[in-house]
Image (cartoon, rainbow, N blue to C red; front, side, top):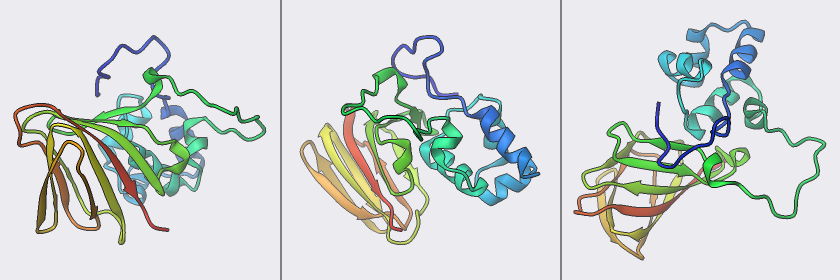
Length: 198
């Protein structure tokens, strides 16, 4: 399970979705294996999410909700039906979901609202020297927009590669294998926007 880079007060972390997910899966008489295949999420990850032992990405939660035919807000228990919307909604820093890459050197703070997952997502990305955020192809037509704030990052999409320095932005197709890496000597920070079609 990923550790947040800042203190999280007791009972105030990202929402625990395990019980809601398990209830929805059992209501549809789906086994872990069946939901895993339907959602394209590994059975071990699905099991960890149901036991609240994993901090899944927005993409994983969106795939699970879609596979179950429920909304992401219902899965998260954050439905706002019948509630008044405040003019300004504050999202405290400690409630923003955070995920890390398998190498532990890339941290993504999920800044966009859960309701927009699968359409447009945006993240604050921090990459330590030597860190690589590698991704499999997204759906056809999907694009990413990366803007480097500090340090430098290399973007690779299919056979194309570009080095971005602080202040630079790159826009590139992500319906191919792609990666963001830090080949520099210092920490790099950026804003990453993922644009889905449909």
